[in-house]
Image 1 (spheres, rainbow, N blue to C red):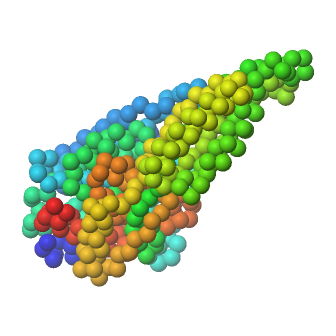
Image 2 (image 1 turned 180 degrees about the horizontal axis):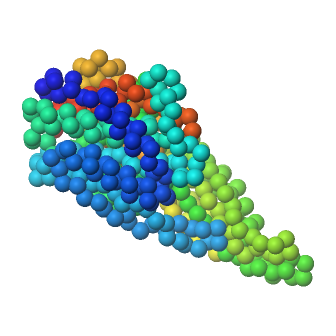
Image 3 (image 1 turned 60 degrees about the vertical axis):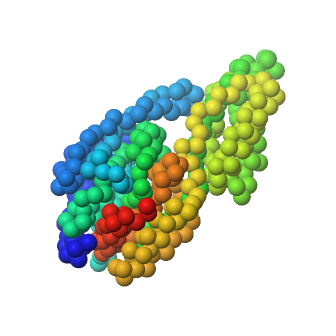
Length: 397
Ligand SMILES: [Zn+2]
């Protein structure tokens, strides 16, 4: 890479972009804010020699407190392609949405101290989107750019599990040499997230039979009691291979009515694909026995949407490449495994090597203390530019 290409990364322009992008609220449910963010990002990314399209979200349903399946609306996703016919292509992904809804109190940007900016999405991950963009700009300005092609995906629903974009992620990952995702570093010192467990969210809708609590209680089939029993039995499946968290029971009505409906919601965190599959089998058996013992019916909605992400040999090669590029830039890159999940899980599930914490250094994400260490913007853009350059030169093949 021409040394000037990395030296020319414009830290001030990056910070300006992050500040303007973070001034738009993009809570996952704020479709109007997400549409505005899309407009702004389209303009910013159009400096690349690319074709940009907006992809409609796939339909998604959720279960409401009454146990009814309702449609959940999502924003459009941003897709950009450069040199789509190139033999060697990579995928870069990020997300536009944040965990802060329109009516959340955390909306403003504040300087917490010199070089540390607080604000919604500064680290997770509007700062990361700036890192991606400026790395690609530096790459395009470098002498060798031309043979490597790439796709960029910025989805609108990562923070709620990418339910309307996971098909798109899988489709865009296929056939790629490698993928880079711009979640913030796992630690403020720049440490990358290595292996990740998976995650699944379930709602079990339990239907019993209502009856008068005084006159004929024995004619009733109590859905709340069945849900409570299920919660206890699910918790018993919790072990080092999988964490199971019964999170919420909804349902019932007046005190004098045997409740005929309940919804139990829970989350699982399997450490491996085998653990996830074993859980599915156990859940089936459990529900069959619950149905017969309580004489209720149980209907399951949801499942594992973030498959576990082990680091295989190919993925390790990509980690090694990132560390090597960091060393050339005077950055000491380390990594550690984490319990968190992100789109990197879904990319890895396609067998594509991915490093999913190429974004900024910062921290306290998903809280009103979220911060960005601003010097990391140019630093991480340089790191990514170098990695992309090496992939262009034939690394990973
Ligand atoms: Zn994120």
